[in-house]
Length: 187
Figure 1 (cartoon, helix red, strand yellow):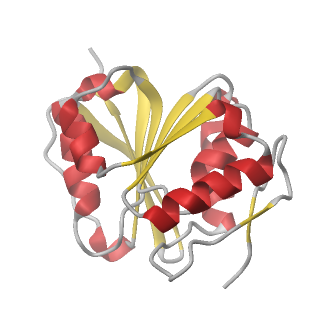
Figure 2 (cartoon, rainbow, N blue to C red):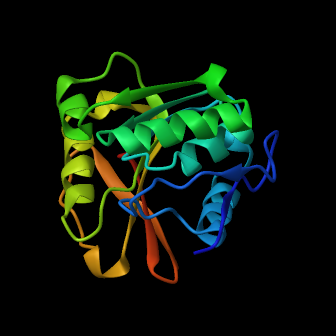
């Protein structure tokens, strides 16, 4: 497997550690670079949640490119330790918080604040991305009015979701990675 690294920004080129045991599926550099090209300069000053954080690669890339703050969520002790290590390696730990908690329990509690981007990349083939998107749809206060929910999945996992507050506005495929984008319905 290719090495994981920060592609751009203040931590550009820094290598990231992988989660031991192979329990995560990190996003490829190609898909990650494309994601941040789509977001563009809107990254500056944004606030993120990296759900099912794994290595923390996406949230760390966001911080490196100018996001103000990222909340990393994972239930795995190994993943949480890896995210902490990667934040320390990149010197971005002052603008981040890591919580070892079940993502669904966090979402069900309701937000204490809203975010500009919520990145969802759960284990494959368990329809967990669907559950996460639907919970955010039910408690749409998690997402700022102009914010995005981005779900990462294998293309075979994709299905059209019936949502009340959010709608799918784009999707992009990069090999075996599909990114699906949601935002609030226009008022």
